[in-house]
Image (cartoon, rainbow, N blue to C red; front, top):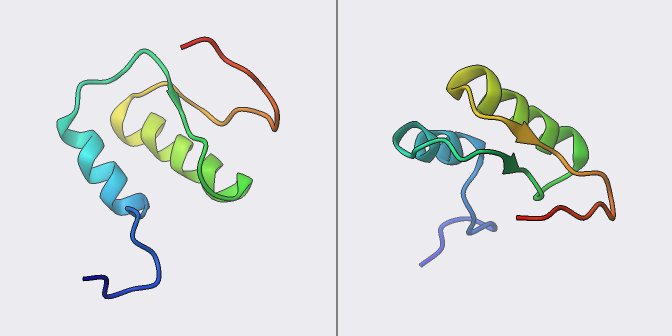
Length: 63
């Protein structure tokens, strides 16, 4: 049952998950508006020491 319009994790829930996960080599933040994605990437870097990148529109990366 959904108690809200959105069923995906918000930034706080994603950061809580990151606390217990091993840091990947690079995290690509690809969800949300550019400003929000940038803020999440910045928090992952500042609060967890992760390398976080918001790819440019249409950018391709090898994973």
